Length: 101
Image: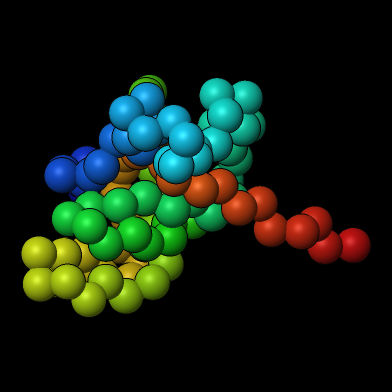
């Protein structure tokens, strides 16, 4: 089984919030702790934010699949459907899809 790469150069959303608490909101620690497979999270690399669908976790990392096309040249090697790993601190937004009945 191939190793899932850790995305490098991700912006630390929690650090951004500490530096700019009045203008930069992030999910609470409680919300981050509740992330589960099927949730969508937004991360940022090289000033480009993008969505990933959470598949699970491995240690301190979440494993997710990139959900939208990235357009910045610095991110050209990251593709839709690519599996990646990152830490909770990199998450800007959490979106839980509505449950289906």
